[in-house]
Image (cartoon, rainbow, N blue to C red; front, side, top):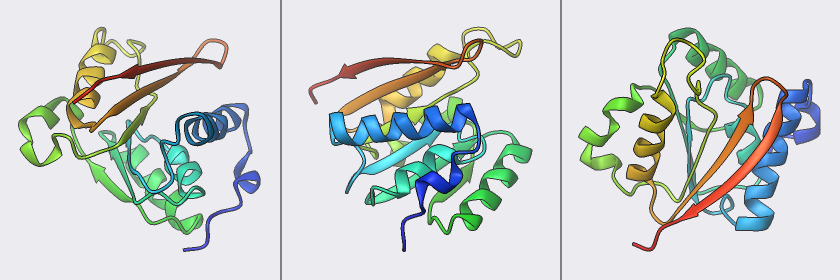
Length: 157
C-alpha cells in the first residue's frame, strides 16, 4: 500500500486537527507505526486515513451510524487505505472476549454528550480501556471551538 499524501486531504479545519492528532500520536508516543490501531466512532474515516500514513500493523474502525459508515468506506477506498471498518455498537464491545486487549492504540472523537446521549463519553472510554493493550491515549476535539485537548492515560498490564 502506498501511504496517502496526507496534505492532499487537509480540506477542513477539523481534518487538520485530525492529522495533527495522529502526527502527535506517532512522534510523541510512537503509538501508530507498526501498532494495532483502533478508531472508535470512526465517522468519515479521517483518523484511519491519517494513521495509514505511518504504516500501522493494522487499522480497525468502529462506527454505529450506517450513513457515516458508508461515507468512511468511500473515503477509505478513495484514499486507497486498507482498514477493517466495522458497523458495530461499541457499548457491547465488553461482551466480545476477542476484543479484549486487541489494540495498542485507540483514538476516538465520540459524541461527547451532544446528541441526547449524556454519559456516552464515559461508556465509550470504558470500552476503549477494555480493548487496549498498554496505552490508551485520548485526543478530544472540543466541538464548539475545534480546540485540541490532549490527555494521556497509561496503564501497566
